[in-house]
Length: 122
Image 1 (cartoon, one colour):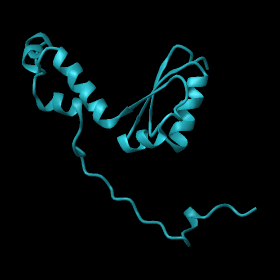
Image 2 (tube, rainbow, N blue to C red):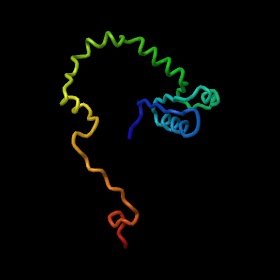
Image 3 (cartoon, helix red, strand yellow):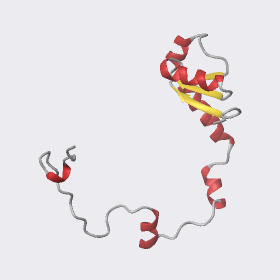
Image 4 (cartoon, rainbow, N blue to C red):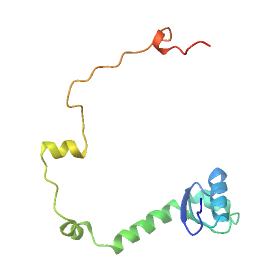
């Protein structure tokens, strides 16, 4: 699989398995953004592999808020987003059924001595 010139997001990238994963991806040519707690990033210090950009969770929230603020507000997007879906019983079932529409048979609990649950003897 060719993952060069792709971007990856690795959680827990300041230490442990997250750091090892981020390093391996960066060595393969992937741009890696590592997310971790600010305390973990400070503990990692300069031990961050080349090609890995560590972001603290506070910075991620700040960047997300900035990206949202740059775009239109939800109120301005709504009129341009198309027409609302008609709300009928049929469309509600098509979107997501919330409960069975017909009676269902409860499953019978199995016991270890039940013949149907035993593995065949060789």
